[in-house]
Image (cartoon, rainbow, N blue to C red):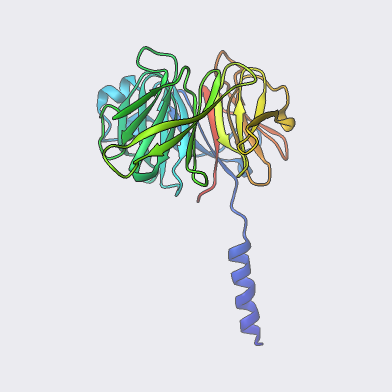
Amino acid sequence: MTKRYYTLLLLLCFISCKEKKSKLIACGSDKVIIIDIEDSLVEAKIIWQWQPADAISLPLVYQENNFKKIDECKPSYDGKNIMITSSTGGIAIINKQSKDVIFYAKIGNPHSIEQLPNDIIAVAASNNKDGNCIAFYNKHNVENSPFLKDSLYGGHGLVWEKNNKLLYALGSNELRAYKLINWSSESRRVQLQEQWALPDTGGHDLVNFNQRDLLITTNNNIWRFNKTLENFEVFRPLEGVKDIKGISITENDKIAYVKAEEKWWSHHIYITNPNNKLSIPDVNLYKVRWWNFE
């Protein structure tokens, strides 16, 4: 083999094997931010930021009133869009590149959002006269009312499980699993498959841990829920950590989380493996997610 061939192999290996920089997406106050954690020691290095005024298609009344306390910032599966909710009533899907909204709506006290097949958006809404439910929207109908609802007290978390085709929903005191029925037709509906009482009060966040388990945060602990055995176990790496509002974990068990330190928010993001504590003094942080995209 020629020297030129070996040089090409080394170059291809360097390109393909080069590790992506670790990034986090976080939200709170009226901001969504992306942080380069490898260049962050104590103060977080913010490399991307969004506020309601950045979205030129978002009506002024939404900009001024409905995104004051952003409590969810979930990347779409391809990383091109960011799905957000705010406890002051706003729901939106943001195009990351343009910072404009491609969908927006309102509901009482939303806390989580999930994308479902056939361009349907599910939203979990918490305590409010127009909340305490899971609501379903057509992504292509902006500023519309939901076409379907199911009651859920203190709705706080949603995870779509593609493998078993179930929508998991977290309330204040229970976890539920829904099946999608006739989902490609106009008569689509959801069917409650199962529900489980939480081992603690105050369900806050719900995320996928691996193919077998979900992670659930509550007032006094963090739990692994085994989807096959249908049981809860304490999540040992953070056993006893209270009031975690947002948690995210990578495939190599690197954890990022936000816990309530100033009423319901914090100015810090905690990271494990290795341990670090990032400070963001001008954002009342609520949720944090790993950003696995360029």
